[in-house]
Amino acid sequence: MSVGTTSLLRVHNEATRSPTPSPTPSESLQSSLDMNRPSVISARNLTKAYGDLTAVDNISFDVPAGESFGLLGPNGAGKSTTMKMIGGVSQRTSGSLTIMGLDPESHGPEVRAHLGVVPQQDNLDEELKVRENLIVYGRYFGLPLSYLKPKADELLEFAQLTDKANSKVDALSGGMKRRLTIARSLINEPRILLLDEPTTGLDPQARHILWDRLFRLKESGVTLILTTHYMDEAEQLCDRLIVVDKGRIMAEGSPATLIREHSSREVLELRFGSERNASIGVELQGIGERLETLPDRVLIYAHDGEAALEQVTARGLHPMTSLVRRSSLEDVFLRLTGRSLVD
Amino acid sequence: MSVLTDGHSATDLARERKFGSLYSRNAKAVVGRGLMAAKSSTWLVMVSGFFEPVLFLLAMGVGMGSIVGTVQGPGGEEISYAAYIAPALLAVSAMNGAIYDSTWNVFFKMNFAKLYQGMLYTSLGPLDVAIGEIFLALLRGLLYATGFTAVMGVMGLLTSWWAILVIPASVLIAFGFASFGMGITSFMKTFQQMDWINFFLLPMFLFSATFYPLSVYPQVIQWFIQAMPLWHGVELLRQISVGSFSPATAIHVGYYVLMIALGIMLTTRRLRQLFLK
Image (cartoon, rainbow over all chains, first blue to last red; front, side):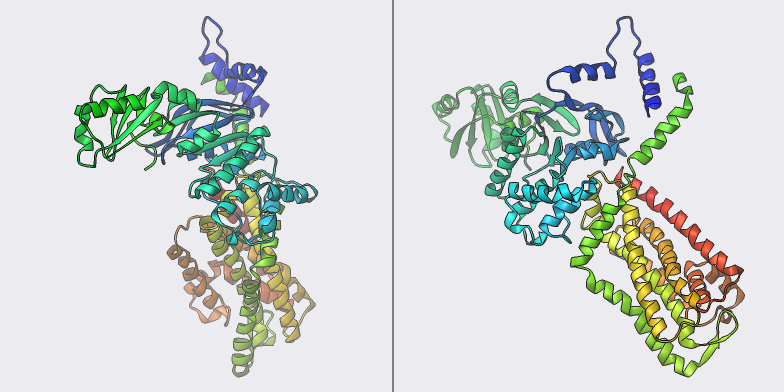
């Protein structure tokens, strides 16, 4: 292995030889490792193509240890594909990717030993009981039963499933299954937790319970990587996120920064009825910083939403409903892609 | 590219890549999971798999055997019809058990339960999963073979102490079918395609010299049957059951050894294509 790596690095050095010595990937990795928060995930020009379709198109990002990092985007943006490449169960077409310094393609089992994975669809073992699910999953990592038995009980406690320990999996509710899947992903005490759409399909109460659990994990120092198409989820859980669309990174930053950079402070939502929404735009020209016309409503981006509403009524326009709210990531996404985030 | 003249290390790297992501020496975890799952749910299926050849033996061997009388065994001696077909039914049961576990069970776990997807997000590689699942299929085959051999003994159909070797030989047969079955299943996407497997298995069961000697067929058909795996299994177990061996015995065993090797190669290649795309 060591021989192979050196020969590959040599290729790189020859190719990038220039008058001023530029840092090689290994050196820049080294320097980032020297920082207080070393990168646990580093992607460079990561690309995945399925035939003609480029699911992930040349994306680069770094995730420092302990960060909660989000991939926000609509369905089909390439979020799940990125997650699969991180887990080493999908091979990239080009680019480089290291997880805790290892390439998941060549060191799949080693990389996954540090990962906890919560897939988009629960794939709990329906032939096993709740507690057995945790223990058997831990065995897949080669962990001894003496460790797994107390650990399973601890995780059942964490997932608020202690009284369901000996139930069958299909007797659990959707939220319980999700919590069990998360508990299962923690059996190997992962340094990085991958969560693919963790709360999709759950009712609001179940989502809040789940968010609370994830927040505790984050506090305990686990690096969270999560994909979501819910902006409230991204705002609640992510320190930093990338907005992806059609396999590309559209923007990167903390939720607050993204909103500040790509949207106004407030948004005025107006509904004039589906027939008038489209044509009313002209009459609203000049109010606020920007105007967005959607099929069901008109959005006016302004620093002061109430003031914008006064201007609208001053022009003699009377919307059926009006709402002033803070800008959200939804607005950021709309601004960046011209499309709505949730279908 | 000139720096890559050190081609040796490049191939080494490629090889290590392929294998490093395929296998983590932990197939026992997959076996453990299978045993735990069997404990709770699949008892009925297992029991029915044991009774099937026993019922055939009673109906065909004892029932029809009463009008057939005795037939000529592998060594030329006269044996009862039941003793003639019992080892053949054991071979069929080894085949069916292995095929059931490695095709329908695997098909379900692959496409519906998403069990393997979950496993492959852990330290397990596809080869761990394949070895574990095949081992489970063989374990089931071993249980069936032991049970059926006991029934044969009780019915007085075993005429030689060599007969005890039908148990490991059945496991060999099961291994051949299981290793191939899993590879073939990986190509299947729908239930209709899964039915093709039965379409292939049923004629093989009926015509592989199971109920009557191969000599009833014209030469061309004989050659065809002899190319099929089940015939080798039937002949192998029939020879062992009466302790009459010939050079053909080695050919039968060799046939299965080759089948196992090719089957594992196919299965591993397919799992890599399916799960590490």
